[in-house]
Image (cartoon, rainbow, N blue to C red; front, side):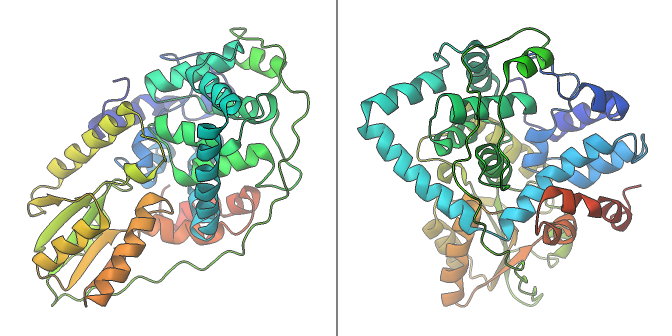
Length: 401
């Protein structure tokens, strides 16, 4: 695999990238030179996505070598992902609406031969648009695309091929090692004009040629990016207040693939943890199967995480369904379960069902949210440019510098 599923590999990449995280990153970050040559960007996203390495340690490492001014562009990229997560946390219905539209799009693909042919050509990279076809194959083969290529790809999918954006977002989620419900869904909506009023993204041949250093200069691209609708965002909801942990209760921990950093969970846990379980959420990512590469990568990170924290955890029970988790908690005679707060997406959907059923059985669920998220997410009330005004305060509060 191009990305080794381990914390050590994430830390190695971080160490190698730090010297280039300042002005060099700002000058080179938009250039996509192809697979195996993405040296101008960090390629840390597959590890940050699952918190095999976390945002705080990445930012601390970068700010230990660069000033906030020289590393401004990279710091903002880290906070972009945080912003997307916070924005969706306070508007979970946007994810639910996407899932509903994706289910309809799948039905249309299965029932409309012409649409199915177009969709398959896009997914297999046989559209005849050389750069697009290259990126489709690179994604499937490596599990990664440069961020600029993701923007171009999404624009061509929506505005040139005129395919449903939900199918494109799903294609990314099935193949990206860093596939994230918030960043992926909201970025595709932004390209379509559904996130920011009057704002779409149009892939242009001259821009592609410039930032691929002449590797591609496609013809036949759309000359206009028509908004697919007007943003109609639900009002932001306040973040939930977690239940307090009761040290006297028999305690279990429920682990999942949204967050492999167990530092905060174990720091808050009672001395004795009576049971532990793990629940994967990849089955809920797509109405199709996620790629073998994504499955293998997440499985590898999971195994490495369990080994890293083995001295603090009892034997771990594998679960696959909500019913499995309920049965595990009852069999272990638990009074409460602790769980790292999952972001909006498949695991959040699962946990909401688990919480309701356990509550009915007299077992409380205590979510442990990382202090970084508690600090940053509530500021994602509007656009990123208002959010980023808080970055100096985030850096100060988290003592990143």
